[in-house]
Image (cartoon, rainbow, N blue to C red; front, side, top):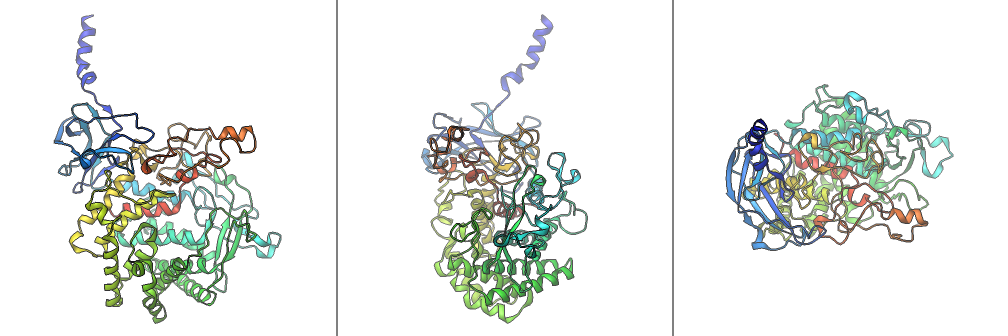
Length: 628
């Protein structure tokens, strides 16, 4: 008995002092750079699905070395706006600033009085390197027509090449002439666009643009060790991934220069199990201008690595420009009953907005001028740049990234017109010094430091874009007085996506092995679908989804299908309206309009949890700025 008592007392400090995990203390679950701003947010729910929960923080907080248990920094917390309730999150909040802690190591934040702690995190110069690798590797898993070997994909996500069977990508037929064998084309390659396995040229080219921009804006960080089949070939792996997309675009081009607009492909679990035919949709002006821009940009970057490939893209880009200029009003609307294409792919890729169309054309001119230095492209750009939303409206916003980023890119070209450069920077400065940009920072409008006007479909992608809007101030030296501070503003949006949000959720999939203990477990995807015993849910299924995907995020406009709850065709379909409780999604504060799920119709989970190459590239671009 005495021996038992001695053992109990020897473990007593553990039982008395061990801290409980607290979901109300939110931090970047991966961590922070040593010299960066570091602020934990403490939250108390007041409005929303968790309003019955209450957390009253103690006044004293500490940074604790996770390995030794030693308190390395102590301080007090500061109330956000004197206890106000934030409308976008429904929370009261406090902040704990520990920016002075710079020593590398593993830590957690401790509420001393309540004896509760945050998730562990790192302070390290390379804290985001592996995170970036996983985010980029998602494109490898999305490759269509490419075998995923165990060596590179891991045992859990290995698969044979998809969509290369009879009448699939190697012999795809025109949607409007399905019985005509003469329309067969080799269109293989590219990436599954999102949770569906279709490919949309306008969007694929956008992904290529932003991956190339990510590379060019910080070229020294892109190593050759991302664990893809091309690793070790002395070319940065991000460029190997980009090449996979560029080669696909080249296959979509006809001899006259026009480019196919969209490809329809079925999904499977895993992808190689799909045997449905692949179909292509007609060329369009918008797809062809998109291809011209992406191929020209690719030709510039790849000239250093493969001149033959670069020359091929240059020729293709100029052919695309010529055809699109001669055929300015060629449209193709997919999945449209009105146009006889119902069932061809899912999302509508055609661009009809006149300003968006003109900006796409302007981007192609910019890329071709940068590549060739020809007056034709230079003159077109400089004669038309004032028609963009940035200059014409003085508007800087995350849904205008195309025109903003291309105009700023022009300001760094060696042969740029100084007056045009001056006008662009002036317009950007005016547009960013506004209510939902710098004003929101000055007024401290968001207790989580990541103010955003709209939480609609794809809000996580929008967060990344907003972060890049601030980083552009430093990158292009638009407001020299904010050159360093702008980096902190941008980093706050990274921290939001990594866990500094009302859900205490890291908005990347299956990242517990990389440091994020509470990362997204489920996504809407044709591979990782609901109920699949291998890939449905991380921590529940055998493997869960691939690590590193960015889901859509909180969506204030979410709703289940209009047939719910009683008009979905039969009793079974009606019952599916209650597969999960969607109350935590509906009628919530904007930042809480998210649920970790992957249910399809009629729950329609895709509007919050589907992934997209568009969200992915914006996150990659922003995160890459903070990798050493």
